Image 1 (cartoon, helix red, strand yellow):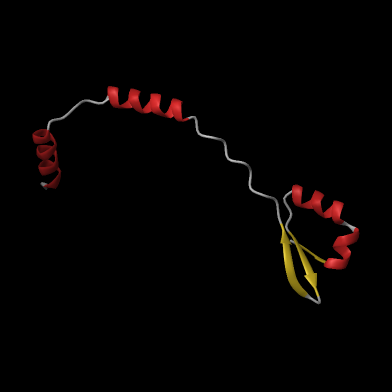
Image 2 (cartoon, one colour):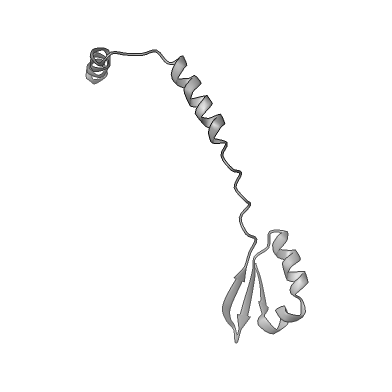
Amino acid sequence: MRHVTVDEAKTMFDELITLVREGETVVLTEGGVSVVELKAAPAARKPVDMEALKRDLTELRASMPTFTAEELAEYRREGQKG
């Protein structure tokens, strides 16, 4: 983390932006007090393909066996034994 006064930052702004792009955090100070922190913005999130997600979910559901309520209750009782 690099500390730079606001006055210094005015003369070296391009250099500070380069440092931030490279992953460094830069803190601007005034009178020895931290006033601004420059850091890289988080990477953009990839959009979710909802249609592909729906297709995958449909395929997953189709691949799963179906159970009756009685079978599920029996599995639950078996899981509680022991």
